[in-house]
Length: 558
Image (tube, rainbow, N blue to C red):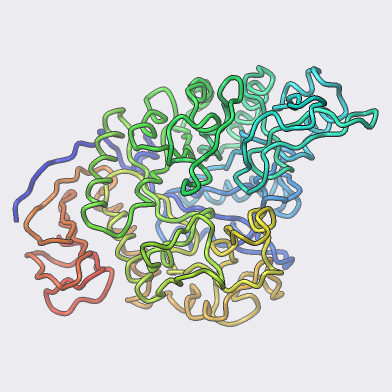
């Protein structure tokens, strides 16, 4: 084999040193309502997170990202925030948060808080004030209120559709009872968009950042980070029917990725820089190219941006090599790490996604009537190989709760159990995201598989998850949990996040082969086994037979 084409990455330091830890960190996403329920009401909470910190320490993660736990009416599972500086009683109290933060820090685990700046809940005090105020008032100027089109303003201001289905505008009734202005909501009607051209909005969020930074959080994951600024004049726009609902497919979308967002994040960068400890910002930004995404992590803006192009790449050796090359070049050119990810709370879990026929669209979720179900055996095998590939790459990586157990998407949820707004706003045409949000199985026996002590569960758990429970996998050498524990331990010990990737050609068609530090990593995406080169096996995503690397398997060789 011949080593070729070294891909440069920025000078990194190990996450555990505390210096720019975010460059190499493995960050574990917790979806609080589905992680662990200490109260028995069927919804996970912050004390539930605290009681499992030892499990996360054993797993070997560097930080935790918590999906929203702030005060909310829960129309969109907490992504509709009514008070940005308080904990919703569903999840506990500020004291519970402080206790969890202190316990995490005692284990050298950092805490990243989800921030939702594109929109608030319609129950937020500001929006209630806006509804009571007159058109043109300072209260309405905090949100995107506009007069309607048509002779009597009876038509919405433009033709934009909501990400969740249906129109993106709702008309209000004014104080005297007459039909009035319209407000923009790129998501649910209960999630009105802020107007980020308003200085009061900008100052309010500086205060929100400082509130959580003062409590000791280590950073923020920014929801819909590409959506805050809308094109002047709000021109009509009709997206491609094949496009993704969150963007990322087309350039020049008037409500995604507008240039003005960069000014906002430069301002936030300055706020975080006033605090010690290398606090970090991570962007959820769905953009059409990796080069455009890299603009969000220039030295004076954000520190990380999810690599969604990598997440969406098909299980194909040439395509994966291309996106890895492009990522390391583009992010390295601005001095930032690539931030790899395979699953989260908004997409089909990769243990199912990678087992789907290639021509099955996944943006609508998958459910009982989806044409072309995932192959669970193939999906898990590929998921383990894909995770082993991802965790060997230089940079930072996010893992989603339950992927370390090999959890698949919960497909057969009954219609009456579904809660995603997408399901309701599309009249069941799109299943939405409930299938990746089902509460975790901690024990193979007992109520709710150990999620709580009562058996209550806000979404039903598949019976077959008993075999995937944490206690069933703990200590089993070939389990997915043991694989993740080994990978995270070796990744940290060998400094892979701070390494440099060099491709090694000659392994055969359909094989990804590269070196990072003292490891030689091979992923066989082809249809036939290949002979392994020399080296001691450190990690294998599947059991090996002799020196043969089977299809859909990744190996780390020292």
